[in-house]
Length: 143
Length: 116
Ligand SMILES: Nc1ncnc2c1ncn2[C@@H]1O[C@H](COP(=O)(O)OP(=O)(O)OP(=O)(O)O)[C@@H](O)[C@H]1O
Ligand SMILES: [Mg+2]
Image 1 (tube, chains in turn orange, red):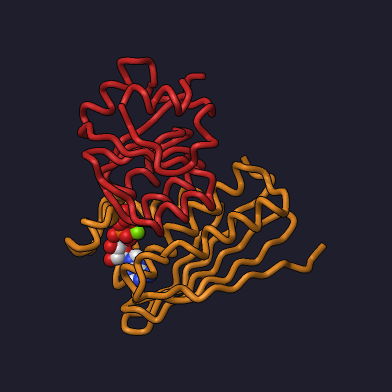
Image 2 (cartoon, protein in one colour):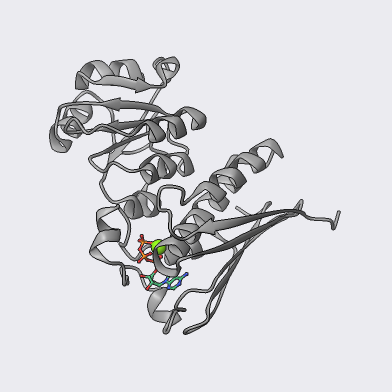
């Protein structure tokens, strides 16, 4: 089967309360489709981290999820400030989060490394002043 | 231990998810940093926290947790309880502080690791 089931979400950058809604919906959809719990968990955590990042660092964006039988591909696109040094941003503990974001329970600099850890493939395309596209794939029969 | 036993140990109030009280829990974690919960937690069923916002419930849901306990008498919003109900997460509130609540549960056999 080559046809993917696709889901599209607009992620509101003004609304911290609603952040994560897309990830919750994807989790529900994958459960209904009968994917193994471990796969669903990896997709959920990676997508949620990315979705929160779009809200706290980039003023929102879009999330597209393609569901194939053997893999799930998540594409997160934003028109935020971009990431000047991706290697640095990938380091555990590196964060530019404000005190306000920290008071909301985020900003430990763990999100991007965590996304990498839970996915089989992750690519970051980012242009300063233009935005960031993060593509993550999770293979279904891996692990 | 069950969520009901946890409730009794913490003298906690059940704010939603009363139907989950007989569910078994084997381990818990305590944190005000959702980043850390997402990065370090594995298979813990219960989250104790002093942080109050909707991302606490969403983080718990992403981690497949079934119970969130607010310490220091923190009260979640109605919206948070709605999200929790949708996600099948029991929400409790206790007067205890984080250290005391975690210590009480730990001393009564609820570990940090998944040990059924
Ligand atoms: N979509 C994005 N747009 C712009 N910058 C980003 C984006 N995502 C991440 N960054 C940058 O990379 C840094 C590291 O991101 P990461 O998710 O690892 O940590 P964090 O979001 O700061 O904290 P945590 O994820 O632990 O809550 C961020 O602090 C920010 O500077
Ligand atoms: Mg992050």
